[in-house]
Image 1 (cartoon, rainbow, N blue to C red):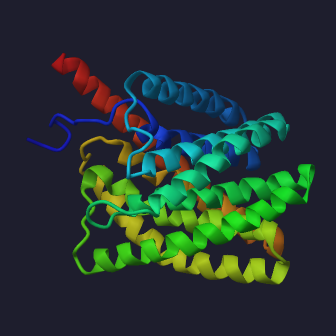
Image 2 (image 1 turned 90 degrees about the vertical axis):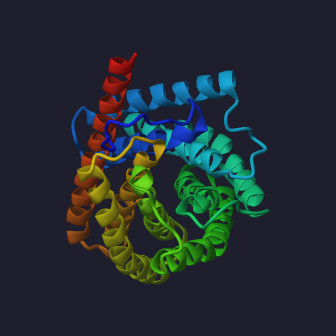
Length: 312
C-alpha cells in the first residue's frame, strides 16, 4: 500500500489547521507587496474562510483543549490571526484591521509561549517551537503598528522580540542536535515542519528592520539569513522528498508555507533597510516558492478529499 492510498487520520477542525491560515494570510500580504493583481484579494477570502472553519470546528469539538500541555496549535492560531490582520490591512490600506487582530493574537501568543515553557512532551520536534516563536510575529506586527499608533507598540514589540529569541533558540538548537544525531526523525507526512525554524529566521529579520537602528538591523538580518540558507536546504530536501512520495496528508504539510513567507518578507525588509535592490528579487523568488508550496498543499488536500469520497 502506498503512502497516498493509505487512510490518513487527520486532526479535527480547529487550531491544528491554523498553519493553513498562516500560510494563506502571509501569501496574500506578499502578493500585495509584490503587486500581484487579484491574488491578494482572493487569498484573503480564502484565509477568512479558513479562520471560520477553525473557530466553528473548535467550538463544536473543543480539540485540542486550551489547557493542553502542547500549545503548538494555539501558537499557530495566534500567529494566524495576526497574519490575517496584517494581510487585510495591506489589501485595504487600513491599519485598523492589523491593530484589532494584534490585540487578540499578541496576548494569546504571550500566554501560549509562557505555558509551553512549563514543559515539553515526548521527543524533540520542531513543533515545540511553534508556541515560542509566536511572540516574534507579535513583534513584527507591533513594530508596524507603532508607525500609526505610537511608541507603546514599539516598546512591546522589542520585548516580544527578545522574549522569542531567548526562549526559542535553545529549543531549535536542541532539535537540530537531535536531528543530526539521528535521535529526531521527521516522518514524510509532517515533513513541512522542517521549515518551522525558518519562520524565526525570516520573521526576526523583518522585525529587526523595524525595531532597531540600521547598523544592527542589517548586521542581524544578514547573519541570520546566511544561517538560514543552510537550514532552508535541509528543509527543502525533506519536504521535496515528501512531495515526490506524495506522503500521507496531515496539517504538517502547511508547515512549509508560512516560514517561506517570512523569509520573503524578511529579505524584502532587509532590502529596504540596506537599500539593496537585488534583495527584492530574492524576495520575489521566495514568494514564487511560497506559491508552489501553497499550491502543493492545496493539491494534496484535494487528493485526500477525493480518496475520502471514493471510500465513502
